[in-house]
Image 1 (cartoon, rainbow, N blue to C red):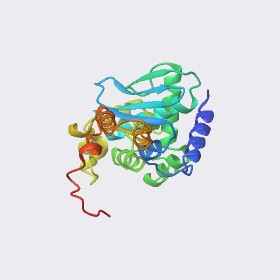
Image 2: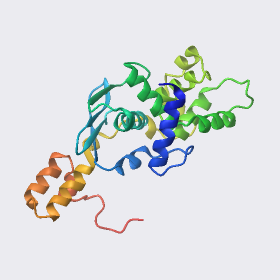
Image 3: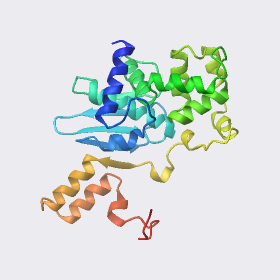
Length: 250
């Protein structure tokens, strides 16, 4: 499958989810809106970024919540490729390293890159950060690009080397001091940090909807409903969120 076809797939999914073909997207919010999809956040260790389980009546995407927010965004986009365009009914476990693995994994990485950073949008942003087209991208430019598209340093360097905007040597020099490079330029560091430890276990989407539906239909007791929610790491729905205090939020 060539890159043009993967780009078309990314544009198609953007439109399906109600987004235009160029703007930065909130990939998590869009994923929550997909029918029959449960999303689980769970710390999976150092080597697994996520997994996709496709079933007859429902599907599951799990994201490694111990990885950085930017990497989790890329992982979600990667798993959406398996969910929507990988025709085999399967369970796929995806590694942390971008740009390695089987042919399907390489395609999923390329698709994820296009979904989060459409080629025309990336090209336009590169024009904006460069003083002239002959200039080489600096670390300042790279930080601005990754912040704009909401991706990890690994993801932006992967893409910029693919586009021949950086050499492998230039990219390697930008893999160090990632958080400091953003903070020193005035950016927040949330993109480069994992989910806080007390929030790394969570389930969203279809599973929660079905638990609520079966309770309202009288198919399960309130006790069983709470048991289902607790097994999905949603104690907030059982015991409430004490931090809100019941006040009106805007």
